[in-house]
Length: 337
Image 1 (spheres, rainbow, N blue to C red):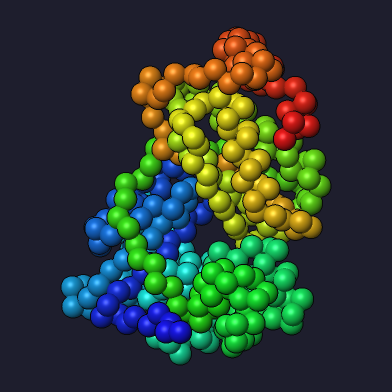
Image 2 (cartoon, rainbow, N blue to C red):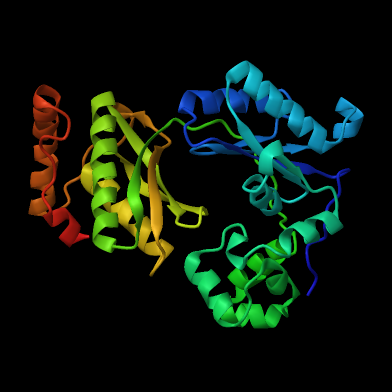
């Protein structure tokens, strides 16, 4: 079976950019505009990351991709006051892994196959971009503890452990191969809420209670703005510092607590954390649009749900008058999930 070929700087260079966790959504948008001065191929990765694909950097700018990334980082600091970490390579997943390990310089440039291999090989296997805790644990049970071990393992064996498509994709990424390209897109309108645990936790009750709190916060905010959300993204930071996220598109744009709760808990269940300790939860409502652009509320034939939908405006008015979150959903929401 033929494998995707490695590209070179003449073909493409991909920057993966991360903003500091305290960066505001408005500052993130300004960073995207700054990246647009270097290339039209900028893809936002909410809440605080982005991709940029460049070609011919030495010919156009007179410097190599790493030096150009340093220039962009300095401009972000001086013009916007935003600190960026940028990973630079010829593959999306490799650049994303590099941007999380830039060190004090803020930029990590991997110019060729030798540099990519030397960087990836000693990393723990859970550093592969896109791998989940359960998948990493499965590889470790078979003695594959580093990215280099995964890259060197026979593809058939990896596919037996992780499944055909997943095994091939993760093994390719461990070898620095990722055929995905950057798709130019506008930053979607979004709003987010986050919860940081006092100590790393694996208690599912505490995790779900925190998520429910975030759901209610976002739902109230959307209804207050007369907006609806089309997508929901859940980003989870683990005890080791790694971050994983998933996105779900709602059947129809909604600002109802019920709909956002259902989508959010589906995302959490799909992540299959098992015994992983969690440090921070971020919930993002994306692709926002005016409420009057969406379809009207449909009859669900569920009396309990219909009662909750009728109560939402009443609860919103109580909270607006007497204080945020004075009234909210009952604990039965957790049991229903």
